[in-house]
Image 1 (cartoon, helix red, strand yellow):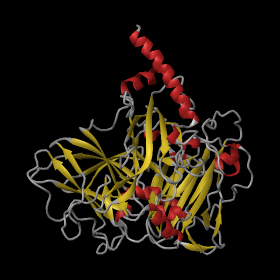
Image 2 (tube, one colour; image 1 turned 60 degrees about the vertical axis):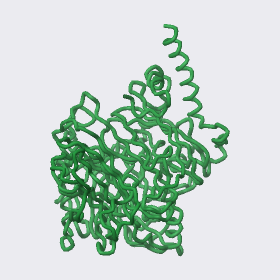
Image 3 (tube, one colour; image 1 turned 180 degrees about the horizontal axis):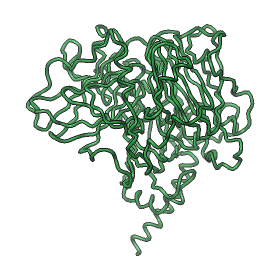
Image 4 (tube, one colour; image 1 turned 90 degrees about the horizontal axis):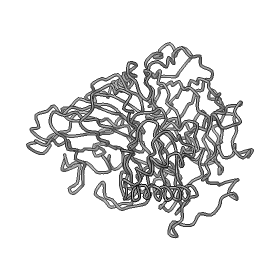
Length: 601
């Protein structure tokens, strides 16, 4: 089955894809299948915590649909912006090889204006795993707009575990009843977001496990299972700023994969999942089903006596269950006086070096520990500071200020002064400042990045377009001697890593993909206030687009290049982007050809 086809004539779409793939390749590979998705991003009214509010839906779904594709497939997503503000969708963890044009962040793309549509086109090249997409602008993810991306192995590549009896995606995250616009306004006014109103599970509020903490009438998530069977749970923390501890009452979580890497398979009774992180667990239904079981996601590293109502609770329901779940929730980790518990848990997550992934060669064949590091950057964050009278966050003393012209577009048209290549390799002793300072990465270099968290809360860092090796983390200040503690053999390869307060995390990344790549904190409040930077990777010897795909035909223009933008007919007048028009015309042609083959053989 070629992905989730959203056409009413799905069988025709399949046939068209097979017949016409070579015609529609654009920047994609003609030899691999295509999957097409139509996303209408709009507001709907929902009441996840019992209070009606405006949420962002994908084609009327909240959360959005799971994009189910396979390694090397070409993905085409036509996005209609039905919001009342600009929109970009980013594909967290998808490695857009040589194609940052499809990244969906302000450094590479102009926003999709209200009422317009734009077609993303990328290939999930040499990749497997569990990821998610979400709107990247202005705290919009705090209102929804997120959905899953499942990249399956090709049939010729063995999976390092038996075929599960089911595949379940679970989105969890902290949630506010206030709109994302109100949250944005609070940050603009120099305020904290405060304690969330709850934690959602697949867009629904908590099961009423406690009549005092949870009001009556809230819709909750129920996951139906069969006794004795094993299911793959893909769990994503799509929240705003809260680390969550995930657990299922009386069930072991056998960790199998995280963000594209098969891990050493270990059982956990609970696991901390930080903002922006994704994990796959194999969970066997081996209990006696005397009742239903709680699925819990509770806030971590907070005053639990105040945050008791900020707990997500769903229900695991065996088909032969004899009653409803009752009693207290399973206990969270008791580590108030042991701040190393969560860090040691994170260190225990390692790459399964004996397993294949997207390619026939083992994952462990990439011997990163023997590669010479060519660049070292220490990125230090700290509590919010005041810059020019405004509350901001910084990395190495610089609070990122997005320019009106995307960085990659400025390079393409040689627009000077949009950014500077002067991001410091180490934090400098100077006052914090606003800036559009970019890291100058060396093509095919091997970069060491140390995230130093001098704030009082967990920060989760992500790098677009790449997976990095998480090789070390510890409390205190990182020093050159800290390298002696690095894991140089089977550190997990992923795209998002936590950095504990008063601690550091070190990652290694091979800069083999040309483009501008966003390095950011996934915590929405600190990201919005400036805690991000871009890495520019240029091949100085390539003038023929061999190491980077060309600018797409449907590129949007803004900032210094706004005069190049052609007006798009509003959606109400049946308008579409130039690329969508092209695709539609080609599909119509191909369908006519296909029909003639079927009707007049």
